[in-house]
Amino acid sequence: MQRLIAFIEHNMHILLFIVLQGMCGVLLFSLNPYQQASFTHSAAFMTDKSNELSSTVTGYFNLQEQNNLLQAQVANQFKNDARSSLYFMNDTITLRDTSRRKLYDVVPAEVVFNTISKASNVFIINKGAKNGIQKNMGVISSQGLAGIVIQSNANYSSVMSLLHINMNVIPTINNFEYYTGLKWDNGHPQTLKITGLNKLEEIKVGDKVYTGKSSLLFPEGILIGEISQLETSQSSQYFTTHVKTATNFRNLDYVYVIINKDIDQLLPLLPDND
Image 1 (cartoon, rainbow, N blue to C red):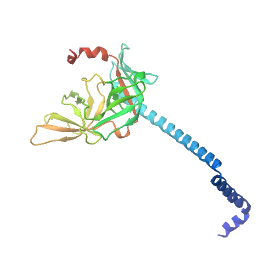
Image 2: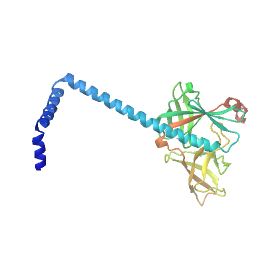
Image 3: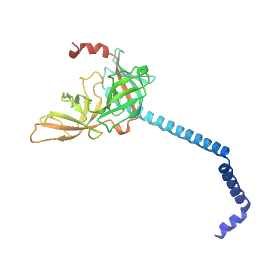
Image 4: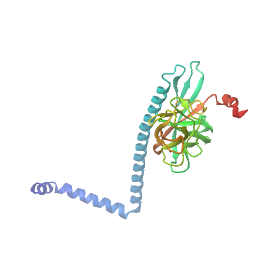
């Protein structure tokens, strides 16, 4: 205590100056509307700039992480396939075969709106027709399947989420496609269901679920999720198969739109178009 008193006595003039300056500042800004408005405006400006810088830095590093995850996923998928190789051109990843003919373009985009609590969930991305994105194009995240484009304008696109009751995907498990379909039943936002899988099928909890060859919107082998539960009933010979989605829709920031370059040539050849 004596040291504190000695310190105050020794620095009395400086401490008194600081106190008086503080009082002057309070009186100046509280009694003069012009100075008060100027101070408020300056403080708000500095706060906005600080928040903008923080958001930019955070978004940049998050984008880098997401891109790294995507590149690792795609590279792992195609590294053992002699027919495919990867080329990175500007902001588009192009998958090509050995003849250098384009197969798919993968365009990165940012999610600007997303829902997970509705029966018909959608999310909106900041890429549109100017980037070559159209209706009925597949969308993936750095983790797996995400949805299908349902509408686009020049700069934005709306995507039917995998968490949409009208979304139906043919799953591939252990290299075998099951045409019963994989759907969301408006339940848990990270669980899909497959009905109609016979109990004699050699599937188990932990098996991975992928896209197959039956879709023109996605390359074969895109991860959909993992079997988390095989629900059985004595009165039925079929499983109700629960699949945990690979994509975390609660934290969906960046996605990648898959453009099938040959879609216009392939569609007329399908039986449904005869």
